[in-house]
Length: 406
Image 1: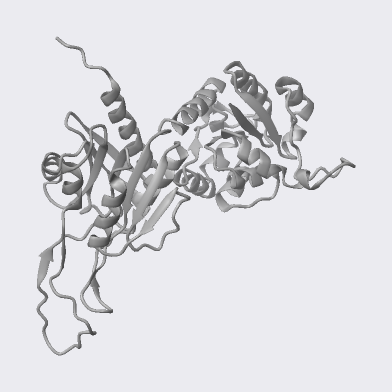
Image 2: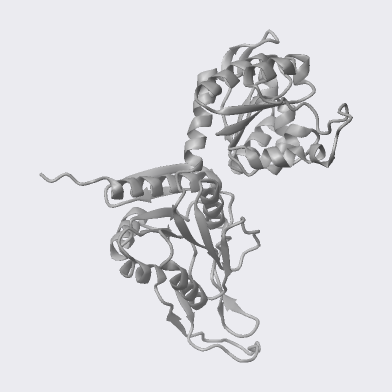
């Protein structure tokens, strides 16, 4: 296993040497990437001697008379070869570059180029840490799936006391190891994920729909890819860019979604139904645009219950997780749905709460199984996706645990 250790310019840069040593003790190869400012605190030779690896200090090897095209795209090679990127310490400036996608040096370019898990351990002056700009950048990074190792509190090099001290070495190393463990815990699983709304046509220009943005399902697909899963994403109409899943199927109506899900269900080991499938569709679709000529009566008929159909036809070992968007008696209604549709788990969203759920970047809810109910506090949808996938791993472990006869 190999990680890149990014070292940025701050007094805590010297602690990166101990972090590198601790990771090596765990059998992990460490390649250090230093910013120009970091080299004012620690020399590259220190890390080269510790790791036995080339220390990258600049984007282009201008000092090397043998420079080739290979050296100019080295960040791509490193990005593809690492299992994780750890930045410790991370200054306020580096957080800003990451959050705003500014590729101004090798490290910030590596951050943009890698799809590996990223762990960042900030260290800075307490006022810089508390500044709204820094906190906004941290919020952006968390929403994108970056693990932030919160700094400690105490006496700072600037003479002030407060938050901003680089977290303890052991805390940083354990955070990275935990992220690496998660990075492969869905390897071998094939996840089928539905997302977004369905549109049920009334006439050639009008439809019945709902407020689903698809963000929750897309976040689960992205998080599952990061954890080693193969992913098939079946999506209703959204304005989102799909993550690089192995197979993407675009649908519009509930009937099209049913057809696509049934076609892929037999190949999936885990199915997560986040889509807000319309419960009703017009009984008759007008061939021409309906003119506005007074009141209109629209006769509706129920659509197929896709989730219940999947629950009744799954093979042994397949996991099936549904979503319940409720506005009243949420826990009671979600538990009934769990049992009635033969699910392994259901994610409850109380959509009556303002500011979360449909069309929001944030969500909260409960993960309910036959034996427990786990509350998920408000967080970004990508963070919530991680919690849902943690539940998938837990459910799979229960299936694989041999039963002991009394």
